[in-house]
Length: 406
Image (cartoon, rainbow, N blue to C red; front, side, top):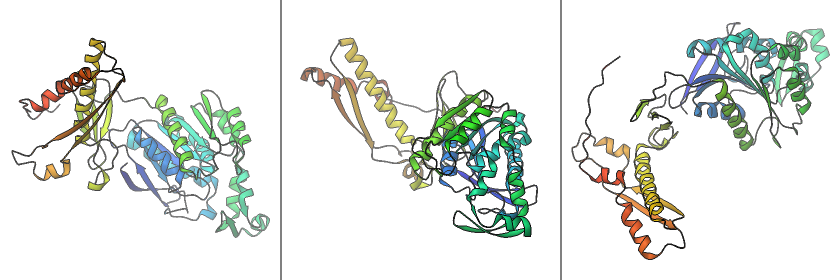
């Protein structure tokens, strides 16, 4: 997926570093991802969820909270309230940029933060909210801090260790965390909610998901991340959570009616990647791209893949229809197609009149033990009679003209 680096100014004046994962094709919506406690936007869950959403046409912004990763500010003086303020600022930016309600996604304490921030962002600006391993009791995070919190309350500041890292923590940080009543805020939300949690989470127990789910109003959903750890360090777990969120979000982020759906033929439009292109038919849409080896994002088949796919699918369909009419025992067709040229090389010579694909190699396997030799031979002859085959080998003319501007 193409990634845009950007910075957004927080209410406290700090520059927050963000990475906006953009769909290769057209954008159907936008999402904001909040990372876990002391994590960064580069965490496995943040990256996988953001890119999975982008693959579904939902642009997703992951950013570093104040004082973490590449963002400015002091984490030890920030606290939960600052995280919420950061989310409100970033959420407003995302809503204004894409001009539609956004999806909020949060992991661990980031999940609690998106629940707390939704009302301040403005429920009219929020389409839906999903959390992963979120605590129902925000002060719970103080139990994960190694240090003398009583001394910090007394002296105003002190050194602590969180997840093996040393921070200078301020009294305000502790007070802001202790003052959060998340369940009452969740009960007041009137937005679709999805809670994902592992029943074996050793850092934030499954009872937190039960409490959040119980406090929430419908529509609400729960998905068990069986055997996953709290941080989703296993890539399989992270991808599963990402796919669930992306699929669930479709219901609350419908396709824009302005997307081009032609009555006939195909409409092709460039997207956000270097070569990524959206392909629209009357009833389908998908992305074509080029491989990373020549500068693409590899988010879809190449133009030659589509060409071979057109020939292969037409061949298989034609053979199947012929066998059906003849009532022959053809059980399936497998076709492997290759060509000896590639798009990048052809583009180097695209102004030459004789530049073209030189050959296509097509290997066909027919399934069906009861097919006799004569039937197999006839089906192989039929392969060369498919409409796309005839089009490619026929007298094909492509007429190009400039379309009228609306």
